[in-house]
Image (spheres, one colour):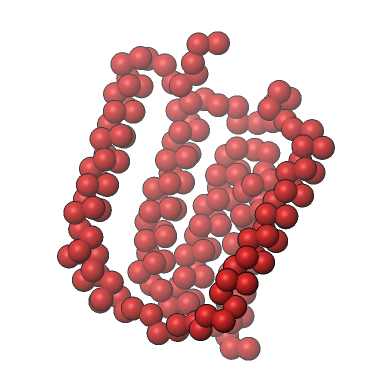
Length: 172
């Protein structure tokens, strides 16, 4: 076992543990922060595997944008930040959800193992230069249009918030 294997295993365990904590945390802000740790450690896994561009995209897009958006949405909506009795689920519902989750994971694992058992793994992937060339030549317009669409959505959400004077609470 090489040092890279040990490092990958440690980072993967941190990623899996923080992902479980993000899902099982009862405090909403803590769940968002555990999600940040999970996504950041996933970028670390990409770095260990030698995919620097994917790791950078992971950090910029998910950790830098999605998690900040989730935290911003939590602050703007003034949602319940702590446990509330009406939003808590019972033990039967949590147990049923856990059983369904494990069964789904086993089913997907079995299907993937059967489907790709004889497929050889390609270890020499496309380099960063080739990927950057494709990204900035073939795929530049779809990315630009997507960024424009996201900007329009953000400006519209902000304008709607300012014009209505409400913070997403709704009429209760």
